[in-house]
Image (cartoon, rainbow, N blue to C red; front, side, top):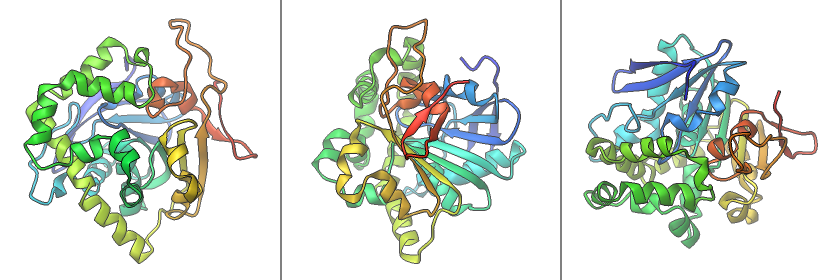
Length: 318
């Protein structure tokens, strides 16, 4: 895993961010979701490193990155603070401007980065998310039951911290399988990495603080931007699972792409079909499919995602 990548820890001023890097060419930052770490890009990153300098980073509070002290308003774990980490990281790696792709929580950091630092981001890709304020504004029983971390992990401490610490295995298994992925998309070693990250009290608290920030400050920051008309300036590609929650929950709003058009002018992307131009691995009988965890279920499809003239999303392998 990440055989040709070097690893390093970068001091961003407020945090120490762990990252892996490989390839040559334009800078491309990849950001993970919950309950994953940078390891979720293990199959996507080597493909992209043929054309880009790929940087896979652990967000503050996740994986091997540090856990800065939080505050009563959860500001140290707002996406604004996490985005600032990534600006500092890429600057120290030699990239003043770069592209960024984020999945789940990493997607929220990625679009906040594009909003707060428009001079830094050339292109943005978000995987299986809509903007945080839009998700909360439209929240109903489907969100509460389907994506339980949004409400559960945002509860005041110590309840969610206690639950995570007591049942890390169950939390990871439920999150990975309950959002559409097959169990063999996550090798035992990778699954164990995710479980181990939820057994450290400092990281457990940091992750809960990140969800608390999402339910408060992140919403406020989004609402403030929407009120002032601040928009994402760079091209934005939004991808989501063809048969997942985003494709089903926001039909009345025109789908995820329509919601993203409220935030950016140059929007492309669409729903990723279950299997498109993706060769079955010789090492596994698993048929890749598009799910919430598509970078792990269908890595080559994500790595080569593009939009056809008819608006459908395809993937290709060189």
